[in-house]
Structures are given as structure tokens and as C-alpha cells.
Length: 579
Image (cartoon, rainbow, N blue to C red):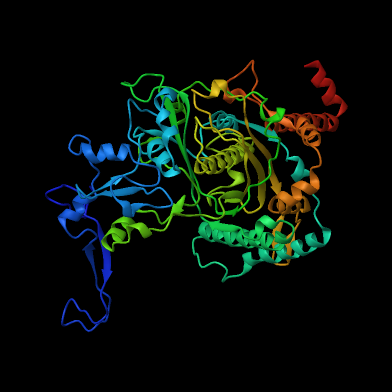
């Protein structure tokens, strides 16, 4: 029960209210001369009888409508002839008991989503709405909250841990159709001037009304990159027809609830319970299209079924992850459908138009194309350098960015797969692809994610040979500096890759990819990140960027020692040898 809202004394149910506005002529005090709008709260269900009709029926007290519900036909119901429809209703009204009854299938036997043999009921679902009711709302236990980007995370080599959670192989490099796509030089000239003018808005005093320096800097980044992405989506629509009818979301929230591995949740629970995870990802901007992106690697090819995924057997408690209990959520940034809600049925019944209910309205652009992330305003690459808080952890910059790209691609594509009526026991039959761009305003990281499987739970994973794939290229500099005279050091390679990402689609794929053998040969030439089998601990792994950084540091130390030795006099050298 929520505080501040009254409840019915007879049924102990929270009353539903709606806000009603009165005209300006209504005054609460006769002495007041100010004209204002007064608002009051009016009950949505005015009478006790109507409020009682909203309750679900108990099986012991109302066996007849419950049995009738179990025997219902898919598109018409046994009681009311006027409730026939072209789609399956979420509710039907029992005239005899004067109650609304949900059309969800009833649980027969034991049901628990933590075990495969106890969730066979999910195959009886007919709509995604019914699937989410049993997949999400019927799991009330606590879950671990995963952050796609956590700068202060205690996990070293976090990309390996995210590979384990999502069953993803990370590939250093870009897919074949992105790597070999061509960019028109005339278009690049126009883009350079446009990006230069857009980034120069940083010096416009009216460009942001924020007074806090961090918030103002973040607001400028949001406006600049939103302008650049909209320019690319508009001007490249002639080359990519998928962008003609695309939808652009701002500040969307992508959510995913999934199971991976087994372990204890409480001292009173067995240690073979499925471990639940929840991730809420918040892209600043995302582009959705009517048609899906073409696959980055053949779904039936060898590259999608090979490579070793890092393993992890320690409880997530050691990583200080949040362990909370609230409603589980799955969303790719938009609602599944609109229009089919409870209030519509009650209003239609009162107006005697129950047979004229319109079907649910689904989003015309359900496929994800590209999403853009801005790192938090507190983020700074300088923070990773050695200071009083920690030692030199500059190698963790790319690790956090790689983990961000893996988790963001997994959440967005897996949520789309669930909206497509797939779940852990009913795996995907085609790949779901998406693109992710992460930036702090100056540095950009690019990722291409291909979802090949969502069956990553402990029951299905031993018999699942598919791997999800994440292509990535981290820390590409967009420019060196912004001055009042203009942008210094604008990087053409970064701009070209940005254009290739937005222009990616069916036309670009057909113009670049000729045979599957070329794609397989290109994939085989890329470096895949795998854990060392002799040292399986995640914190002891040596990612590519850390190895190259250590080699560079060793070469710098040797060069400094050589210069120091060369600058010494003959006497100092002899004395050093004698010591």
C-alpha cells in the first residue's frame, strides 16, 4: 500500500484516482483575488462494486469462471459472444460473477524459472505479454545489479567477467562490411566542416544554460553529438534506405533480466539456485529501423561456434555488486505495444462496445541499429593515472570501455529477442545485430554486437555451442583540441568509421560482401580475446592493450637507461663496473 493514497475499508485494496482540473472561475477561498486552476482527485472506480470487479478471482471461491478460463478458445470466450475479437484479449468479463478474469494460462504443477524442467509452462504462452508475466513477475527473489559502466569497479579485467555473464567472444577489430566499406571523399569534406562548426558551439555562451561546470560540459556534449548523429542519419538516408523511416530515441532505458550460473542466494536456499542478474542501460541516443541489420559474421559459420569463453566460479558478492529485490524488467528502449490496457476494457464495457476494442498497436521500428553513449560527467581519463587513491591503472580504461560495449550490446539485442517471443528455452533462430558508440566528447569507441544465443543459463549452456560476438575498437581520438579559431587535429579515421556505422545496412552489405568465404577469412585474421587456460583467474589475465602497454613501458625504461648510461663520463662508468 502506498502512503498518501486511501484504501477501501472493506476490501483492503488501494483506491485508484485520477486528477481532475476545474476552471479558473472556481475559488477555494472567496477572499482570494488570484486566478488559478484548482485540482482534486476523483476515484477511477467510484463504487465498491466496480472496485471489487477489478480483483482477480480466487480458485477456491470462484471455481466456475476459473475452469471456464482454462477451457477458453484462443480468440473467443465461452461466456460472452460480444467479446469475439481478431486478437487475444488480456481480460474477459464473467457476467454471472460480475468479475474481470485475466486470460493468462494457469500454473499446473510446480513452476520455477530457476530450473528448466519446472518452467515448461512458458511454452503454453501465446503472447509476449503472457511470457513476461511468468518470466519476470513470478520471480520475487533478489538479483544482482550489473552496471554497464562502473569507473570505480573493484573488478580487474572487467571485460572477461562481462564475457562470462553474456557468453560473448570479444574480437579486436571491425567486421568485414564495416572494415571494407567505402566513404565518398566529397561527403567527408562536407562532414569535416559540419563537425568543426558543431564542436565550435562549445564557445557559444547561450548554447547551454547550466551553471555547474560539469553539467554544462555534459550538456554541450549531448547537444553536439546529437546534432552530428542526426546529420549523419539524415544525409546518409539516400545510401541506406533503412534510415528513411527510422526512429531516434533520446535518453531511452534498455533493461534485461537473465539467469547465468548457479550459486547460493540465502543461507536457507540450496547452492544450486540459478543466479539472477539485472542490467539497466541508458543510451543518450539510439536509432531504430523497420528492418534488422545484416549479420556481421555467418550465423551458421565456424566463427559463431568456436572460441573459449572465460569461466567464473566465485559468488558475485566478492565484487560488491548490488543485491536488490524489485520488479524484473526487460525493455529495448520502447514499450512492447500500446492500447491493450485494463482501463480500456472497463470503459468499453460501460459503453457497451466491448466487441469494438481496437487491437494492440506495435512499434513499426522494432530493430535496433545504432546507440550512442556519453560517459558520466565525472569521468576523466586523467583519473586512471597514478595518484594518492590508487596506482597507475591506465590499462583499465580500455577494459571498462570494452565491458561497456559488451554489456550494452547484450542488453539491447537480448531485449529485442525477448520482444520477438524468444527466451532461454526457446532460443533465437536468427542473429540480432546492433552497433554501439561510446564517447567522452573527445575519444570514441566502436562496437558491433551480434546476438547468436540467449540460452546462457546453467541448464541450456552445456548443450549450447553458439557464442555471441562483439567486435570492438577502443579509444579512437576524434580531435586533439578545440580552440576559438577552430578544431585542431580532426581525425579522419574516426570520422570515416562513424560514417560507416550509420551507413551500415542492406545496401552497404550487398555492395561490400560478395562471398561468405571472404568474411570467414577476415574473421580468422582478427585477434580474439581468450583467457589463459593455465591461469584461469580473471584478475591475472593479460589483455592485448595491457600487454602492449607493458611492452611500451619496458622499451621506455630501456631507452631511458641507455641515455643515462651514454651521458655518464668514463670515470663514472668505470666506477659503476667496479661496484
